[in-house]
Image (cartoon, rainbow, N blue to C red; front, side, top):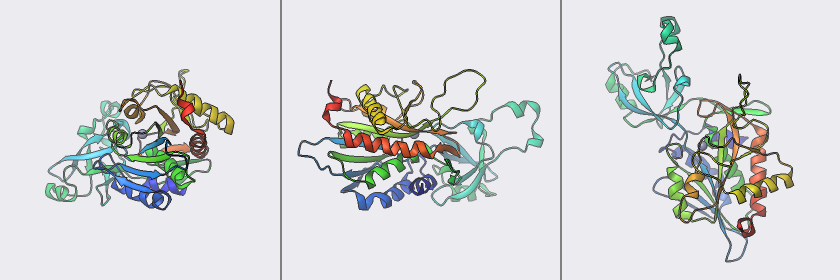
Length: 344
Ligand SMILES: [Zn+2]
């Protein structure tokens, strides 16, 4: 769990992924043949294949960025005004501890004390535009100096081992980054493997669009931390995914219909290895798979996701077994992958 802990505690709100990129580089550099970054900040790690000259290129994607906030202004008494970067839930923000900027200035998303709320205010959700981040500054100029416009703000929490499960920040998508690091640290495959640690997924799959054109892979696998919604419900709704039921495959989400040949292949591999898999409820969320499938001539894409409760919040909960099974499933699939999988 050490790799996931390290990556989870790195900070990389969209467009400012450098801390995550640095940590990943340290972990993979001795294990790959080639490393490159592009102007956006995408990181490409190539592990050359053992096969012949006509070998395939397979891209495995994990996004480095996480949701957070950005400083957009100041109040006269030194508070930061903010906007969301990516999909944030206003209900969970008030009162949370945050880290501001590259220097990780501690702050809190200020909330009116409960004693002062009238009935209507207690039941209403405060919009992010009305929130303020308090870094202890007492004047506008001090706040501006410590946190210039555009400064990123991230949730402040640490990784915890909970036994069979684990808790941490930014599991979406550091859990994918950690799986990809494990794969790159292992033995080479017959094809060229390009680990693409991409930027700016949370604001519209932007890094992956650029990565697709650079790498031009034959196949793309996308690793994600995805929504688990398996808690007791009043209505008899089916959950998106559930903890401990294995890595989740996706038939379709809002970004793409995933490649059926690849999904069938992944199910076969899981059966062969005795790994449980589940299908994520279709139609919810999106992944970089949407960018790959719609790039160039259409790159066949599949997603392997680890279910995470409370995703896009300061602390998600995931299952160690699901995480380890996702690594085993991807490695098993890559060991078996050849052009016949894509034959019509
Ligand atoms: Zn994600």
